[in-house]
Amino acid sequence: MAKLVVMYNKPADAAAFDAHYFNRHVPLAKTIPGLRAYEVNAGPVATPAGPAPYHLIATLTFDDMAAIGAAFASAEGQATAADLANFAQAGVQMVMFETREV
Image (cartoon, rainbow, N blue to C red; front, side):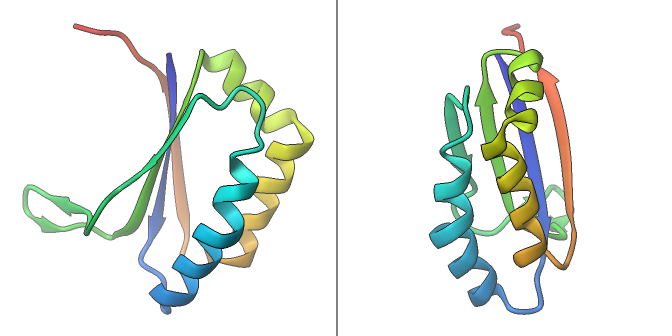
């Protein structure tokens, strides 16, 4: 499996962010080919030292890194990426990686 982790910085207007994210962005992202699972944090994001700079963290699961690449290259992936400009003005970081059980 492979994961795409998307970390959204705290927005100026959390209610507006959430409204757009859950009503527009999530349904759009769920059309991306190859997406196996889509999870977001439930409640505040924290670190061992206290609050984190993130409002929301999304974890998207794909079969492998090639599937993530194909997802980004698809029309649905391009539309989802373009939608970030509509609500993620505070910034967003993304990391991708293959997973293995240990």
